[in-house]
Length: 341
Image 1 (cartoon, rainbow, N blue to C red):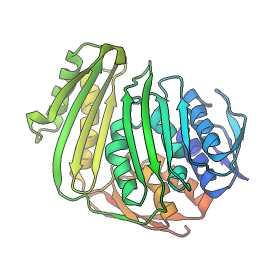
Image 2: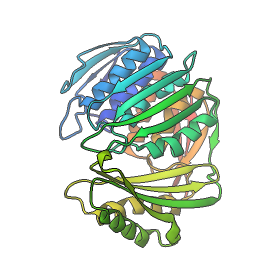
Image 3: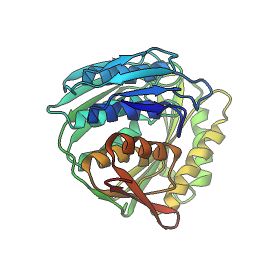
Image 4: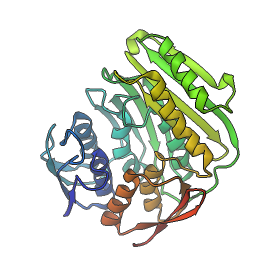
């Protein structure tokens, strides 16, 4: 039984999601205490409960202490069973984070799966649908599986109500090298608004233009969704390279000016563009688990995030496999799998 302090490292829900996925993949049970102890409101939220319920459903697992607000639980995995599953967060909690809990185990299952996940598709502190489709899944599919995703309905904070559909054709994972991102192809900035004033989109795009000054005017587009999809707002910045696409995002929130939201997201993209890295700050930690299961491979990335450092520690505890990180110049880091460390 592995014991985990949920307040260490990243100190949030990632510790729980990564632990559940690793437990299903290795058969190692775990107890986690001080769940989300690094957050202002510690304990399980609804989206975390749904993520663990999803892990239990696909993996025949038993989870004691699983309830909203809980600070401790024990997870005992069973056998991962592919199939058709429907998970509903019930709030604007992230559909993407629920998917990330079960994705790699189902990618290695002995048959195909189809998932319908309802909740938030464009929510704070979580990967939006566009990141999953354009940044993460193309890299995972290069490793052997065939994973597709469809946005059936947008879901913004605080209403939620979104839905994604994911189909997974499993495969053994093969190591890949993701060192060069290749030539820049195109950039795109979209400001989505639903049920809120349209001028918010214009203000966000104007602020993003001031940062991404080399991008042409046609790269910036406002998109008005039906009012019943909102209220909600998301700014999506996409940079497509020959071998990878990176997506940065910002989400509207009461009290946060549209200009500030856009400037922050655009500066993150500008920082990525100024490097030579393959993976940006949000893709890097999502590559660690499949690379560890493939038992090889390497990728370049920008400065390591706390999420990534936490994931490295969890992978080492469950599998004995570690990652070696070396700086290659211009702030770019090479991440390589090693058997132990």
